[in-house]
Image 1 (cartoon, helix red, strand yellow):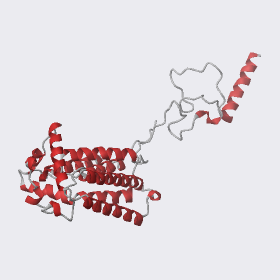
Image 2 (cartoon, one colour):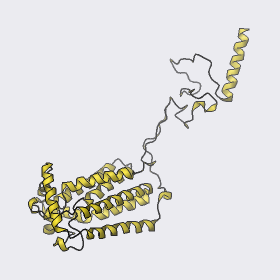
Image 3 (cartoon, one colour):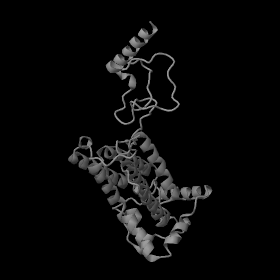
Image 4 (tube, helix red, strand yellow):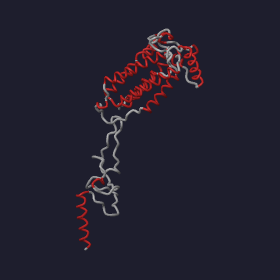
Length: 319
């Protein structure tokens, strides 16, 4: 008995599902610029950002979350390690997400469309929260007692004076899009591929979480909030279950005439609906099989001729 494959082989991308390249480039670039300008519009609320930071810090202690200083203490034991963490924070965030979208666009177009929608929805919702809830990162909060590792050890993407930084809004800690985008990259690649090693993509969000907390750029709550927002976005824009990722269903022998060929019901040849034959090759006998109580139904022209000959023979014998 042959069973259907449960892990389909690699397939060529469905180019019909691939949106126009120029349109997608302009759309993604426009979303990125809108987000950058939106973050700048949220800048300048220094007093409110520090008040919110104090409230977040107190809430984390009330919830008994682990202190951000514990993670930073591990990194500070090695200067090369803290330098690598700063580099990961500054250099991996945008390139990894961009490469993720480019690969999906080229190899998994159906997954690309939905992943782009999820990222756009998550980023837009994060911008709204940045506007409504400005938050100073833990590296600026005196009560946290943490080191600004970017400024001390480098490299850093932020200016030395947060209030006048024209390159980035340093008071937009919640939610952490570093963590949100990293989780989306991992989820998207796990869903879109079938390699046995695909679960290793979870290392990207795990490392990102340790880096953003250890460098004192984000609180634990920043990651928790973005995780909840991403879960909502994924529920709204469900990722596709393509032929590559969906396991093939195995035909049931009790419902189909054969598991070797095409799954055609045995009553398709003219029998009454509901009459099924066991999946037994012609001419073979099954030990312990029971014969039906009544005369067997007709199954096509050949089966009908054989049944008619047997009926005539039995009628002659009775006479």
